[in-house]
Length: 104
Image (cartoon, rainbow, N blue to C red):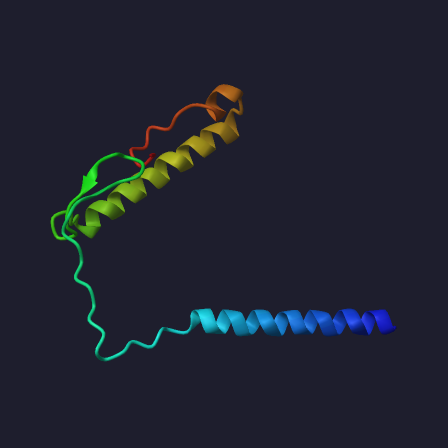
């Protein structure tokens, strides 16, 4: 019984310490009124995967409808591939490449 109570107390202590650490990390930092916010850099930053450069956010704006259509097309292609595999499961269809343009 004493071992159980000791384990319970240590567990509650661990939960309390974790809760305090999480609440301290989740609080927004207090900004000083004299602190000046740095402007956004306008230099291009290389992308990690594509190797292309991204300009300023204003120059790379894409309408939300275009993005939604691309995502919808990707979902339909993935769903069709899953249904085809479910109907006729084989290793060739499992390891085949997708035709979706949203793959890195």
